Amino acid sequence: MDLLTVGTFARPPDDLALRALQPTLGADRTLLGGGTWLFSTPQPHLAGLVDLTALGWEPLHVDDDGLTLAATTTFATLAGVDPAAHPAWPAVGLFAGCCEALVGSWKVQRVATVGGNVCLGLPAGPMITLAAALDGTATLWDRDGGERTAPVVDLVVGPQRTALAPGEVLRSIHLPARALRGRTALRKASLSPLGRSAALLAGRLDGPDDGSGFTLAVTASLPRPAVLRYPAVPDAGTLAADVAALGDAVGVGGGWYDDPHGSPAWRRAMTLLLAEEIRVELGEVPG
Ligand SMILES: Cc1cc2nc3c(=O)[nH]c(=O)nc-3n(C[C@H](O)[C@H](O)[C@H](O)COP(=O)(O)OP(=O)(O)OC[C@H]3O[C@@H](n4cnc5c(N)ncnc54)[C@H](O)[C@@H]3O)c2cc1C
Image 1 (cartoon, rainbow, N blue to C red):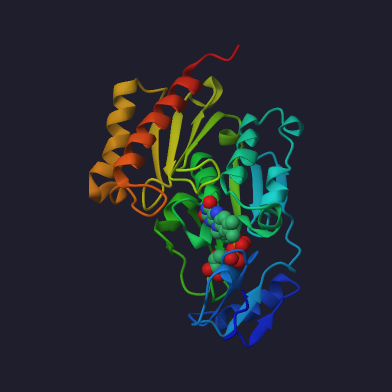
Image 2 (image 1 turned 180 degrees about the vertical axis):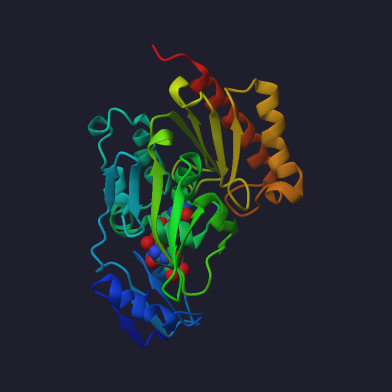
């Protein structure tokens, strides 16, 4: 839709130009990623946009430490990463599944960005799930020219609420090689086959050389993402108790999420079911 209150549009061509514009960002001037959310709903408070898509950030940077995704990497680019090209990193197989969890047409997938997904902070944000399961660390640029890093899972603090300061830019997300070496499993529940995620869970089992730890990211059924970690695959009872506690104890995960995409009770039941499926899948010794 047209954003009729927007009167200024800047498209910085490089980092320097973006940095110069950052102090002007605030309640009435915001960053534009793919625009799939910004242009989907009225934004009467907005007078200006700063478009990130001409910066030319390398979508995926691979080195010995792992893989770094630019905030401007699109879902289509991420979904197109061929797991066969990264045989040492089985967790790359999670990329396509997480992209598909956002049920949008190819038009949406082609422009929606990793950074926009995280910074929008929807409970059903699949890039949040991906980064939470793979220990993703965000690099953020503040308005004064500084930089900080933070676990992505800590950036989203509630539905459409993040820990980003005004004018802060999510520059990239680093996925460490140790996590990428893990085996992963993904499960989604939604009220209809093409519905928004009501529960989206991703698990990871590290190999013996990396400590054999088990990690479970729980998203969409909670107002904010949660991660459970174990030194090895937990038994069914332990996992179920810990997963239940995330939503049952309101202070921990904020209660089970409630919106038109699923009732809290159903989300709780599905989250327990999917967690157990992931536990069983990753606990099986691959043939
Ligand atoms: C059909 C359809 C289905 C959808 N399904 C889902 C879904 O299942 N789950 C879900 O989470 N979303 C969903 N969405 C919403 C949205 O499309 C996605 O969240 C998408 O990933 C947003 O990315 P974007 O690049 O288009 O963000 P934009 O719309 O450009 O921006 C979103 C927000 O993030 C901010 N932002 C963007 N980039 C940065 C950055 N680098 N640093 C700081 N702030 C930034 C913007 O200022 C804005 O507030 C859906 C949308 C459609 C149209």
